[in-house]
Length: 146
Image (tube, rainbow, N blue to C red; front, top):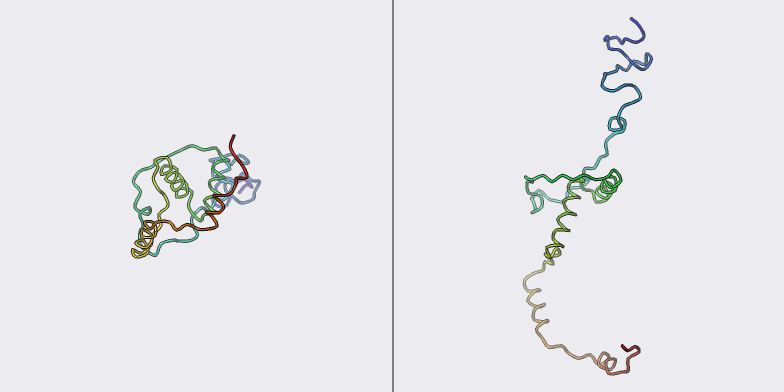
């Protein structure tokens, strides 16, 4: 058996190092995709306790985009920092921007009904004047418009 043939008969291109050459790529010209291990971009933590929320429903539509390698790396790093997949990170950012453009309120404050009733009652009551603020409003202004 020659030095360019392994025990199984496959040729080796690394000078007898024992690794069979598969023939897809010539030696030294393996694309970067195969040289480096893939980034692990899966979320480390689960945020639900078994119940699906509104944004965890099954996705049926697909949106694709092209980005530069630098932008892809930046988005990937941000997704890792948020413990999310890149797809989920991009989806959240796009939905937030869409809500801003469409003028929808993104932030929702939840409170018990009785607390909400107290808040509405406080807003309906007439304001009580605060003596210090009345005094400041009556005093001379430090700045004036021309």
